[in-house]
Image (cartoon, rainbow, N blue to C red):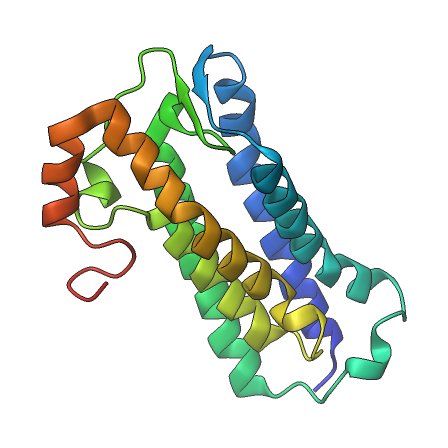
Length: 193
């Protein structure tokens, strides 16, 4: 199967992800930060995530990663495209439900509140779930051993090193309310984990 199908899917998914995130990023910058946990580890993790996100664009635009290509199979393209779509839907829902409480880094904003409705009713970290689903979809769609898993590896590292500090920050900010919320929800997958 022609790899341009994969390239078209990835370009479209990338455009949709940026279109979802951009207005929320713009809006969050207008709300004053009252507490920040943005340290050097956070900066390094965010840079790695950006690199992982853009490696597929490098694969599309240049022959630099061509030595790691393998044949694209229709079943992989279809399954991956469906996962990308599901990931993007979850990404949109997560942003919409968080509203101005969202931040790209570990920050508490003015008038920050604990969001427990919408998709957050069942999952504590649906945005991470969205990005994991998206990145697995990307692995399936991209027929390249480097570009395919690049975002997934970056997200695994980000989640592993960031979710603990993020939950501690929320616990410090919201106390017993956050503890009660955490006791009735799972981190990523409803009813499992």
